[in-house]
Structure formats: structure tokens, C-alpha cells
Image (cartoon, rainbow, N blue to C red; front, side, top):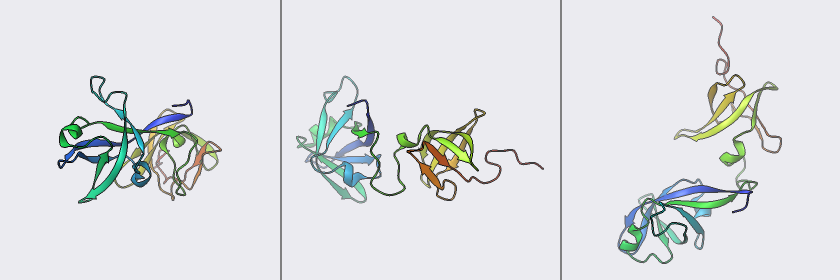
Length: 181
């Protein structure tokens, strides 16, 4: 991994599925069709005492059963072998300069640290991105050291300028200031 890359978690192996080495997969990615293509090599995050520590696995196939992804890995041919990988986190190397292929999409590491502007005035910076069921939340560390959660929706975040290092927001009244009686 170069200094311009990071390891992204893309999934976790849950439990063996059937007798032929398949494993139920919990997805940590919005793009499983890109991340789990046949031949994709995935690093493993496992305890040091695991036989898989420091090793990689190669995707053979992903199938969907009852809306649940199931992964088949090269060299894992039976249930006993599959069970040795349970709870392993699957990682991919991600170029920090790469952007997602779909429009108006960004990786978390591209957003964290961006300066946040409201009406042309800096109000803070993005400290983290939280992925919630309804929508993503931007956690903004304000200039006076408070944290404000802002839904990451177009109406409240009309402009993301990665190259310029800033985000423009239009939050509702009262989110960043005290409302006078």
C-alpha cells in the first residue's frame, strides 16, 4: 500500500452457508458489484493468532439468496474451511485521490477535513461522516469547538468542492445559532 492509499472495509464474513465453502457476507460498501467481482483480491482483518493473518483471499463468485449476499472464495471448497474465516473483515486498498464513478458521490476520507461555509462564512470543518439508515450525516466541528450533525442531503449541502477543500451548507435556522425569543 502506498502513502496515497488507505484500506477500506468492504464487508465481513458472517457464517458458513451450505457445504461447498460459501460464506454469508455482510456488506460495508455501496458498490458490491464493483468490489466483489470474480478475481478481486481482498485483504483480511483477523486476529494475529488466526491462520489467515496477513493473507488475502480471491473472490470466485457472489450470489444472492433471499436478498443476502453469499461469497465463494478461491481455495475454500467446504464448510470446514469456510468456518475458519468467520468474522473476518474484508479490506480493499483505495487510492485516496480516486473518486466514485457515480455523480455527486464521495468517499468519507475525501469529505473529512473539508472546511464548511454558510453564507460565505466559515463555520467549521467536517470531522466525520456517519451512515444512517435514512441518510448520511455530516458531523461538523464548529469554530467554537461544538459538534453539529447535518443531514447530507442536497437541500442542506448544495455544493461539495473537493478540489477547493470546502462544502457549502444551507442549514435550517437554529442549527448553528441560538434562536432569540
